[in-house]
Image (tube, rainbow, N blue to C red; front, side, top):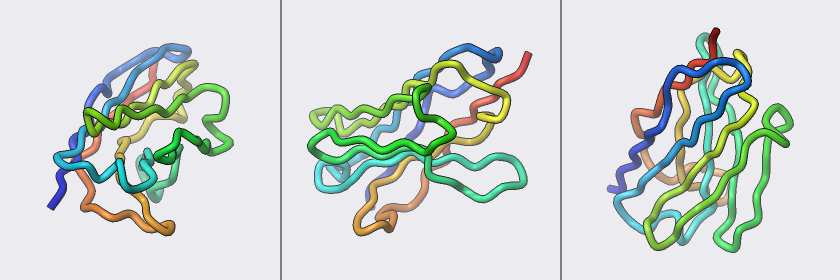
Length: 117
């Protein structure tokens, strides 16, 4: 069973930046699309961004132009650079591999991002 470990979250002021990392215990990202999700308090988990094995990316409208997803296949790691953060970005952020639109691994513990002044 592949394990996913997210890190890099924290408390940041509006307009600030954070870089999240997601390390997989196996090469699950090499064979599948890698994605970042988030779950805000009282809301369902939602897709934030994805990246294919050949580097094509997709962003939800609410982060487009502010977030950048990237991957390091050699390290089995996916990143999410978050700039111009807003209070509504406050959530627990998760990563996973995606195949045919379905996540293929158990969820990790996520990393908390709090945007507040």
